[in-house]
Length: 341
Image (cartoon, rainbow, N blue to C red; front, side, top):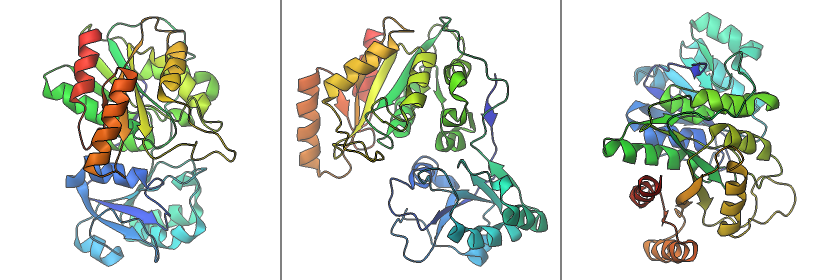
């Protein structure tokens, strides 16, 4: 199978720079949540408001803590490495610590980092590099079963939802694989395809490659990217939706978000039933019986009462299980998925 495969040596130092909020620190937050045993600490520039709750380390204390790999935990818009990060990253590489990043800017294209890594005998690991020779998608039906996360926007919990659903299926003894489509998922899983770095004509082919023929009772749980609603990132979402040929989708949403976050204009998020209908209409172009197995909602900004009321209201309104994948778990969605597939 053509996949991007990486091996990051633990323990990790999660580098946050001057990241303005946790939405843009989703790589670091994801790794800290799903692989806490690998995380030794965090490193920030002065004034950075994001705190992952890890020990604050500098070059010297990171060395003392046995850190092996520095993971750039920020996903800024455009995927560029800001100039103000370079002094710290250069110092870390010169000290012999591997640097891993999933940005569009390649570490290996930054002369100062290349020189520092050479002097410290450190590796520069660029995660957002798709495998070579990805084919054009052909739409051929494949054996096995697939469930794809789709979102109302970027950074609404598609990765968390996929990982939580995968864990729930495995807990039940069901043969299932998590299929990573973004840099953070690849760092967590060790393999995948960064579909937003694939040339547009080959995105559906990348999705087909990521989730090949399998046993009839095997589930691929596929991480989503972007949103069909986004004027910036809808292309990658549609290619992934067609190429995945999902038996089912799970809609992912942030309960506090009413507009597309990254768009320059005023683009409201429609009612969730409309979003589901649009996603299913597109999915059924390559998977005629695709259905929605539920809605995974980030309610982290709500208290317990608000969360219960919000989820209950939407479960009744949509006629589908609506859960928070972290606070509640994915059991109701797994039940629905397995009953109706």
